[in-house]
Every structure is written in C-alpha cells, then in structure tokens.
Image 1 (cartoon, helix red, strand yellow):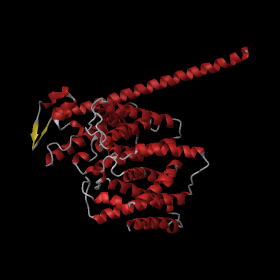
Image 2: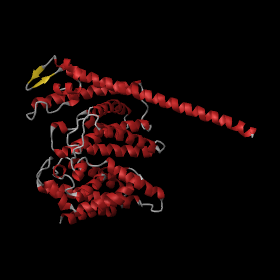
Image 3: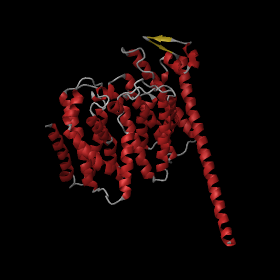
Length: 460
C-alpha cells in the first residue's frame, strides 16, 4: 500500500510542477524548493533509528545493502542536478538515481522494517512519523529527477562518447566517494585485519588518500572554473551527509559535530555558500591541521571494517580533500600573511566555544566523567597517551563538580594546534614557491627551445 502511496505522492508533486506552476513560470523555483526540502529531509533521516546500521553484518541482506548504497548518492546528486546545469549530474540523476528511487518505493516495507526493528541506535518515534517521513523522502527522490527532466528538457546524448565516458567514470567514483560508512561491515563483516598505528591498513589509508586527492587534481586542473566548483559542491555535500551519519548510531554528546574535524563539514558548507576567503583561510590552516593529527594518530577499533573505522577514515579524508583541492585548483586566492590573521581570530573564537561548551557538557553530564573531549583538553590521561612529553600539564588540577580542569593542558593544546596551523601555512607557502619555481624553469626551457628552432631550420 505504501509503495502506491509513495508513487501517488511523487505524481502529485510532478503534476503541481507541470500543470499548475509551469503556466506561471514558477516550475524552476518550485523544483529548487523541493530539492532543498529533500536535502534537509536526508539530514534529518540521519538522526532516526535504523537497525540495518547495527545488525546487518557480513552479507546478511545484500539486496538492501546495494540498493541503499545506490540510493545514498542521490542525497548529493539530486540537489546538484537542480542547482547546477552539470550534464553528468543530471545524467546520473535520471539514469541511475530515479530507477533506484523507484526500487526503494517497491521495497518500502523492507526498508521500513529496519527503521522500526529494535537494535538501531537513532531516535525511535511513533511508526506513523517514520512512515510519513519515508513516503515524503522517496516521493521527492522520484519527483525531483522526473520534474527536472521536464523543466530543463535534458536528455542523455546517447551518440556522444564523451557523455558515456563521463557517466562511466563519475558514477563509480561518486558511489565510492559517498559510500555509507556502514556498507563494508554489511557486505563482508568486520574482518580481523590488523589496524594499529602504521599498520598496513593505516599506511594503505594514507596512500589511497594522497592518490585520490592527487588524481582528482590532475583530472580537474585544466577544467573550467565552473566544473571545478561543481566538483567542490559534490565533495562538500558528501562530507556533510557523512558527518551527520554518525547520529544513526544514536545520540551522544560526543557525536554532535563540534570537534574540529566533525564541524568541518558545516564550515565548508558555509564557505561554498558565501565564498568567504577569510573563513576558507581558517578552514585551510586549522581543519587540515586537525586532519593531519587524525592521520598521524588514528583512533581505530579492533573490528577493522566496522562503521566507526570507515566513518573515521572517510571523514578525515574529506576534511583534507576540500581545502587542498579548492586552493590547488585556484578557486581561492593563495595564502598570504593576512591569512594568519583570519585564522587566528576565528581559531580563538572556536577554541573558546569548544572549551566553554565542553566544560558545561562534562560538568552537567551523568553519563561519563568526560562525555566530550574537544581538542583533547579535558581528559588529561588521554592527552598524555598521545603526547607523553606533556605530563607537566597535570601539575595544576582544579576540581569542579565531578570533573577536573587542567589550565596548563588547555594552554598547551591551544598553543600546539596554533603552531601546527602556522606550520601548515609555512609548508603550503613553501610548496607554492617550489611549484612556481618549477613552472618558471619549464617556461624558460620552452622559450630557449623556441629561440633555437629557427636557427636549426635555417642551417638545414
């Protein structure tokens, strides 16, 4: 029954755009509105219970696993197919996301069974709320590409080899980049691959991340500015969904995206919406520094391919990808001395916010002594486990309620991350200078070659 209701709802949305708003030339705005609603609903969806995330392990339901994976990229692709005129996004929306949404409608009760079954970590609400949410979401997922097809008159150019090639390259890349973090455990299980510091698993992650970012840069460095921005939009939207997906595992204060690498998705979304150079400078210098700490000192669970490990790796890879690619592709100006000022002011404000909020949460929490540990500034024992040489930060211990405040630890952490941001600035400037020097050398060689060419021709 709900399959039929979902399709009827999608049909109603399409009819409104085609027969009611099209006459007043409001169809485009209407399409943008429902695409924005779909984007928001997708984020809200990440906060509600889904037993699939916790209970389906090692290929227990392959059909649901693959359908979910295919559907998941629509959260980014469908809004982008509406708000940009990128042909590849639109081709994926129509040729891939639309059929997947229809399959989701057919499998409505199967998916809903996972939403309502015990074992999930997110919020449990009345059944009618989840049924309504899922009906609206899938209805929008069907209506958006259908209405976009009508409004833009877009059609896949079947005769174009470039069109096929772009689809063949971008679709698998999008699926891989935007894979739900629980997918590996649902397909193959946790596995017992060693995942310690500088293990083969850890090193492989570092190598793949470097290769991925370098590969994207090489592919897009000669593309138009418009195409580069469309790439960045996708990267940021993918990260935004990933950061929110941690709440599928249930609400904890520590899962609220406040920590530097978790809140990055929100900062990046602000940057691409406002094109703020000052905020970008802060993100580049501070968020990359936070990501590098995570790369160097990973927090892996022993269950190697579990949801948390994959989420951890994907999130920090994405935290690194956006600022590095946005700067290297020339979408933001090169760093200058003013970038340090931009970073410093925002870093002080953000760090102070984390300190005050973290103190209040830990003080009022009845779940754990240190429910959150932003910047590692609250839990002294954890801080020295990462940095054994800072044991002196425990010399001043101020008890407050059931917790302790370590002023020297807070000051040390603040200074450490600030110096790391300055080091990031120096390294980036050094790389830029080296790159410019190599380009200048290549131009001189090319000029000399051209100057010699006529003389050779005359001699012959």
